[in-house]
Image 1 (tube, one colour):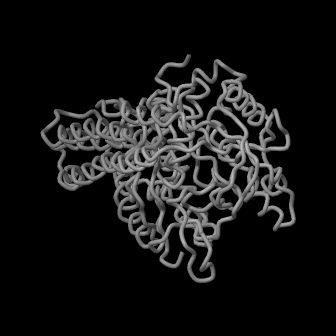
Image 2 (cartoon, helix red, strand yellow):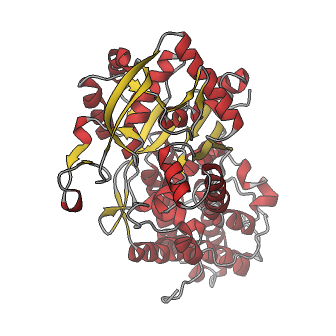
Image 3 (cartoon, one colour):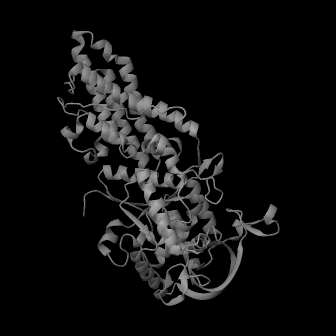
Length: 525
């Protein structure tokens, strides 16, 4: 077993009825930053993402496009969803598709276990079904239609008419887990986060749980039930099981025990599936419930949630083609409080790119490397006696590491970045106050100049480590320019939680050249 505590993180698996937009990319980046942070800290880390490819909506979309469901999903995964991971630089450990043979085999093992334990039965069912949600809608999510849908019942989320379905289905005895779930939420108040999401889930379960219809017989695009091939498994049960099947459930006990339980990150619109249905299924199977479920907010554009059906999505490469993947990752993690809704605007992105990345961090790195080259022949100098201003920088760096790591533990990525940025601001202020260019003119101040530039350089060393989970392109360039690659080894090998230790960058290390980390972007770009 590798050293470090286990940290298994999952994104939702994304429904491939269309191409991804920046809302999907936002989720991917958040999960990637969290796992890169834990990996850099030495934890036994695993990041899973993937695609949800069964269900009626996929079948209808594929048919409308003149393709079989498998042809349609293969095309979208290959041409859109896998390339997304490269566009925004995601370092996932696995990518699962619900059409994978490994997934289908292990799903059947799980469902058979529930059936053998007496938690599955057959019955007639009639209800209003939303194809968009792939869900029979509870009363609270059924609304009266307006405009062209006047007189019809519509989904409160999609605003589209609901379909009345009546069929003989297999059911999961979810109602038996109401009290166990409420006890779980009580005993582990951080099981569902943030608190607003937890309150929503507790209120929902407190109203009473119905048994869950887990099969469909009116279409065949899904995983056949092992005991009745005329039924396919309900797409949400199929999809939720990916978190267990991907790490070997039923076939690779060693891997499963090493990774499970998972921490799930989901959009708040699919919270109930993950915080109610999924733990109930796991309890029924005699498995440990997840480590937790964190529901992030929606990404809003013009005050409205992005939607594939409403054609309001923005493709991630529309941003990365101009600003690059680092700016994409930084902006969405810094500008939006993770767990809350957040608005995207091109103006805010451009302003933060210029002020925080180019002028704040990038210019700081360029100035320090340039001054080391100019005043010390490209070598890290021996610092003299530290003065109060130097010690203040050291304290800022040490405190920022602790505060940022604590913020990551509570999934407050925006807070973690704000803490790290205190170092950027402190170093910029420090250089302005210490005026190394003035010190360089006075030979008597040579030791002071060395101390100032060593302080700035070792501060940059700490920044390279702390920002590496977010700025995956810029930080290796800075690391190499500082000479740290040859002096300390690869950036990926640096222990993140030890980044606040001082005096790590060896005296005499030769610095290199540093191209602009965040080049100027023309206004008409």
